[in-house]
Image 1: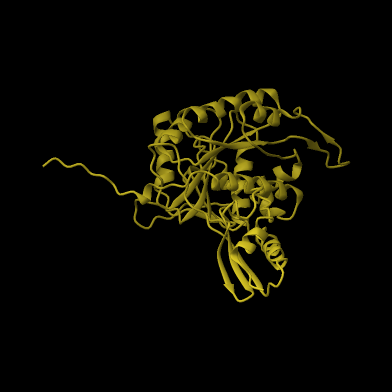
Image 2: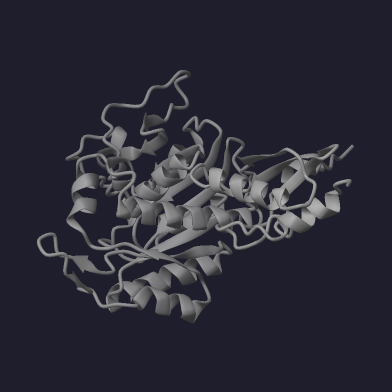
Length: 362
């Protein structure tokens, strides 16, 4: 009995990618089908990093094809291919950064920097090349959170090498000033500093650059939205009404400047007592999900208010690396995968495919 590619496709149309919710055929993941007698081989290309998922997806694909009567050996090569996606209109992509994700909040104190660093580490843990840019010029916290000290090196006197730890490339104004030194700078200098950090850091072939934004909707946010090619933004809030009020402003600002909202992360959603394990919604409950319903954006997940997240981040070893198999790291990894899938579903950047048109006056 001869095996046909149509039969293979029919079998794979029953295999659902757990991250996208689409089957391998309609999601255009399965490709490069090869038939050799009764033996079948194929590729499954994922548009997001998923090192922890490839084995289960491969097993599911092989099991489905093995269900075809008369089939022989079946092999499936599952891999990730992350491409550059379009940013806001009129802003050119960086040559060495495929996707820029802004992590923002309307107000301070909601755990935005902690969320940003753990999401960056979670994407790296799934196999992506990831960098983090500390855009909070007045209050840079990534050097401490990432456990990095010292000054960045420069090879040519014009650009600098990113600092590194836990497989992440990091750039922050905090590496260039003393920890106790206040940044007494006016807006234009701050925005110039942000652009220099972004453009004069020698990022090395990043799939994702996570930008840890300062709180609010001021100069830096506007500069980012007008001059930096942002693929999408993630809003961090707590369930508290006052935090949600400011988170709404952040969301509306990104909407106004044409940056898509990838979703909302609710931080400190419920307090877990370290003695008895009792759960209590200290800051209220359901605020993030309600805001998502109101604005038609995705609810990416909720993090508990636990002492371990604070202690691990303060010690320079965030939860995803301090306890990679723990419950908190699992939540961060799930949120990071959702964000990567949302980015993968966006329109690809085609600007490199088009020739530049130059008009000259003779």
